[in-house]
Length: 86
Length: 438
Image (cartoon, rainbow over all chains, first blue to last red; front, top):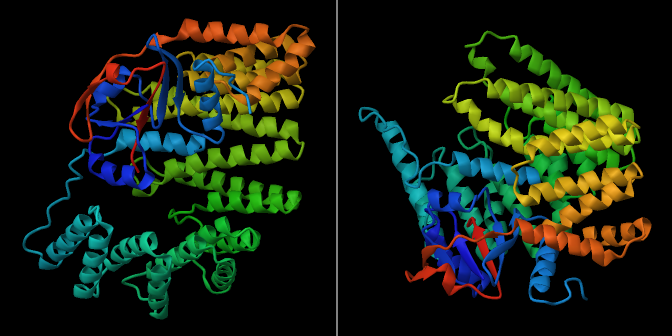
C-alpha cells in the first residue's frame, strides 16, 4: 500500500501525523494538480485497488460508514479469498 | 463522511488559496494602530503554524501575557485552548474556569463562547458525564447565543429538544442575521428533534414555518435592485430554501405523506434545473460557473430522492423519468457515484415489483463496489428470479474487468526524499490512497 499526499503545502505535517497514527506504509509527496488530473482525482480520499496486471479494479471516492467493509471484501476477493467470510 | 460534507470539502479545495497563504492588503504605514493590529495577527498566524505543540503553547501563553487586551485575544485563546485540549483536558478545563470568571466585554465577544465550547469538549474527552450534563443544563439556563446553544444541543441528547427550541427562539429575535447557524438550519434541527420525540405534527409545523420564512426572505431580497449591497446574502438564503425544502420533503415522506413529499421535492428539482440553465447560459469566464460542477454533482441525488418519493406516491412512471435524468447526468461520473445511483434505481425497481430490472442494477452496483448489503440483495433476488447467485456475481465480475483501466505509472518522492515509482509498490494487490492531510 502507498499513500500520496494531494496537498502541495501540507507535507510538513506528515512525519508527526504518521508517527501519531503509527502508520507503516510509505507516503509520497510532490503531487501537482496536473499529476492528480491524470488520475481523474476529484476529492479526498480516493482509493485505487490495482491487481497484479496493473488494472484498476476498484476506485473509491470519499469515505462513508461501512466503506472499510467494502474495501476489505474487495481486497480479499483480489487475493483469492472468500470476500465475505467471517 | 456524508456526501454533502464531502462535496463541501471538494469545493473548498477548488477554491483554496495558493500555498503561500493569502496576500493581506498591506496596512497604511501612516496608521500605527492598524499596523500594530496586522502585526499581531501575523504573529499569531506564525505561532499557529508551528508543529511542536509544547512550543506553540508556550508562545501562545507568552503572546497573551504580552498582549492582554485587544480583539486578537479571541483567536489566541481559541488556539491555546485547542493546544491544551490535545495535551491535557484538565488544563483546558482550568483555563476555561478562568475565562468564564471574567465579565463579558465588547472587545472580546467570543471569549465566553469559546470557553464554553472547549469546556464541553474537554469534559467529553474526559468522559465526565456528570460534568457534561451540568454544563449543558447551565448553558440552557444562562446562555442565549444561538450558535452555542446549537452546539451543545448537537452533543446532549437529553436536552437537545429544549436547547434547539431556545436556540431558534433566540435566533428569531434577529432572524436575518447570517452568522452560523442560519435560522433555516435551526428550524430544521428543531423539527428533527421534535420528530425524534414523536411530535411529528409539530415538527411538520416548524418545518413549514421555516420554509415560509425563508421563502419570504428570498422574495424580499430578490426584489432589491441589482447593485444593492443588501443583496449579498441572497445566495445563502436561496441555498437554505432548497435545503429546507429537502428536509421538509423527507419529513413528509417519513410521515407517509408521499404525495406532499413528491410535490415538495419537485420544487427543489425545479429550482435546481432553473439554476443549472441560468449557470450554463453564463459566459465561459464568469466565475459563477464554478458552481456548475457542484450543482451537477448534487443534482443526481436530488433526482433520486425525487424519484423515490414519486414511486412511493404511486407515480412510478414519473419516478423512472426522474431516474433517467439522474442517469444522464452521471454518464461520466466516477464509478462510486454510479454505484449509489444503481443501488437506488434497483431499490425502486424492487418497490415497483420488477425483480429482473432490480437485479440488473444491483449487479452493476456490485461490479464497482463489493458492498455486503448489495451482495445480500443479489442473493435474495436470485431466489426470486430463479437463477443461481453465482451467475450474477460472475456478471458483476465481468463488468468490473471490462471497465478496468491501466493504472498510470508515476514517479514521486517519499517524505524522506527518496524517489519511487509505481513499480516499486506493485504487488498482487496494490492499494494507492490519495489523501488530504488534516
